[in-house]
Length: 93
Image (cartoon, rainbow, N blue to C red; front, top):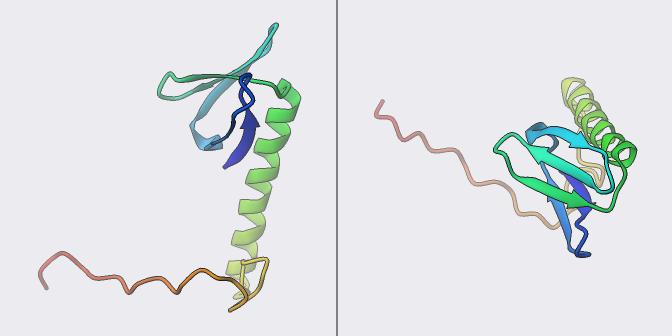
């Protein structure tokens, strides 16, 4: 997710995979794949840079996971998130 600031000053996050285009004009407008539009304070270049950084972080995390390392920047066991619940199949065996 990337953080942007709407023209109203409200901070929000957008999924870069759902961004269809970013339009420049008097205002920067982000258009998502579902047709929603967001008028933001950031420039087109700033939005693109945030998308690139988000995707680079995903690639780096995948690289670490592929090597068998913990992709969590805080390291194993150093965060307050509880362990995920076990996966239970809903399909009969």
